[in-house]
Image 1 (cartoon, rainbow, N blue to C red):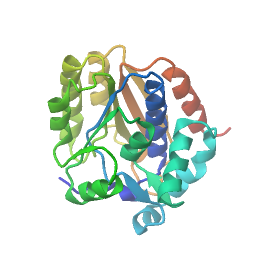
Image 2: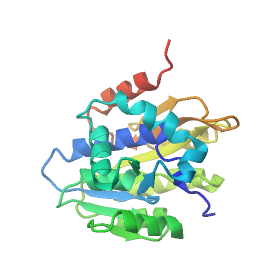
Image 3: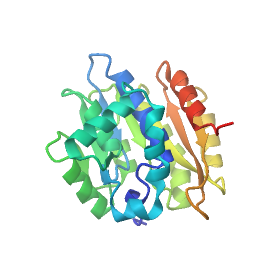
Length: 259
């Protein structure tokens, strides 16, 4: 299935969770002079307009980044990437993870992106026009296995499938284990939705068995609208960088309901 389009959900609270942690980890990794590789398996279109009909229809950005931006200090990597994207693309833009990565990487770093959906792939190419990026229209899991271990060997992989079908949940632990065997120094960051049906639980338990030193971080929030099944956001990190527990604790405090 190739029906998922993130434009309806860009800038929601799950994006805030995912992108804040991604920006923080990239900032941590780029403090060392050694170059790194960034690999993203399901990139989307990379740049979204919060004034677009899709975003206005769901109202998820209005309940997400519009309310949550002040959670982050002006020098937080996520806040910096938001400001940089707006300066380049306009005040109504929201950067997806490929653009957040591109803005945070350095000249010597390498950027590899996969997106199978034809429309999203075309949008991704347009958004990153002029950037030195390896952009592929192919299955992201296949790219992950083909590229690892990458050159440079230091680096980060973001895994963010659409979870349109149950097979996504079943495939993730297998692919992440294969990647780890080939690239034991790589940081793997998996995002997953927390839905009312809790379909993520077997996947996460499998990951915790495979990666007992991994970091699991989940936040909850109210449904964006009546009948919406997403009630939270999760991240599972293999080879979590030092200090990430402090960052996840800050995020947990921000997502905690008032009172």
